[in-house]
Image (cartoon, rainbow, N blue to C red; front, side):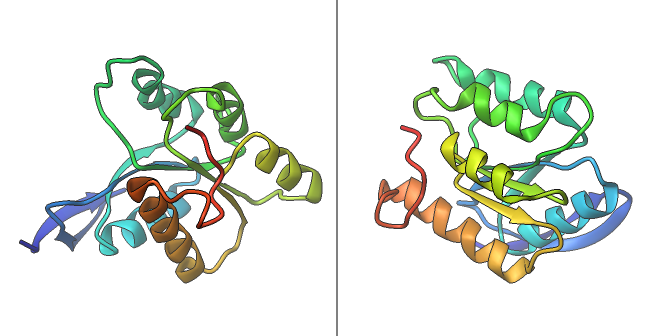
Length: 162
């Protein structure tokens, strides 16, 4: 049953669809405007989104996923690469051998060929250079979540982290 609910994102109130079987996205972005924009886009697309302001908050959310007993589960993590504290790349590197860990999409304003190659080698599901097309990001999110929830990771070109 789809209903609307009011949410507040970085001080902005709006109504979004509430999807009862919503997939969860963990979003880490230190830039307030970009974080608010991405959260709104994902929520309007029907996803449940938890936001982190920096790398330390991302680690706080990710830590329970590293242990056999999960306190929460995410279908996808979208993280900026450069953030105060811990970078998205460091989280990716630290979790790449963890069985069943959710796929990670990295976003960056400082992307170069080396960064792209390294992120793919470490298992990033995708990497986007800012600015990027939100429709392309949403399509990629949908593709990754569909692939991971149906177990069809290879058919969709998603890095296999299981």
